[in-house]
Image (tube, rainbow, N blue to C red; front, side):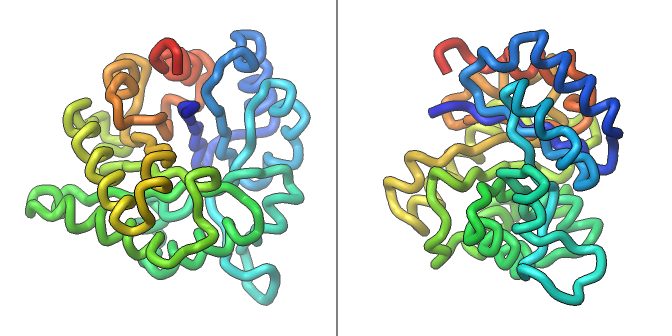
Length: 253
């Protein structure tokens, strides 16, 4: 199973910056790694950096999408628009969409379903708030998010879906779940997915960790047997730090 390392640029980036980033990764050897690399750049950049990304061996993804193909939905982006812009991936349920924008589990489910139905590959983001963690509700919250998204979703498979566990209290704070805690949660997520979708689905599913992943902690996190990649925020804005995380993938993976 190839590791998957995603760079989520959020609301940062320009065409020159993205082009430089991709050219620098190509020079560092991005085409030679076995891991799948995906850049989730702002929508405006996607159609303008496709050739450079392809040359660097990096796929593009949308940070969000809407659950209709077209219509009077001002400001939204459809799966077809993402594909036309060169994206092959999308994010669903990122913590900032859930807790800043206010998306519910039901909204995340509709977005995930539509994106997969239209031939994109999706990363489903799940994770608990600090107050939920302190109240001992981590497992309840994360299991509920996964069940809401995947139960009965026949378009989802281990080939077109990745789950990213991103404890919300660790995103952008400098705090990180210990490698042992990441391993425990990833193992539980695989167990819950098995209960919802069966053994074959769960055994082939890739589960990323997201939450202040940096060059100095990536090796410990990625070495855990249930961790199959990373979804990287701030540390992905520079090619050298993102490349250091990519190079932290254990040998042979």
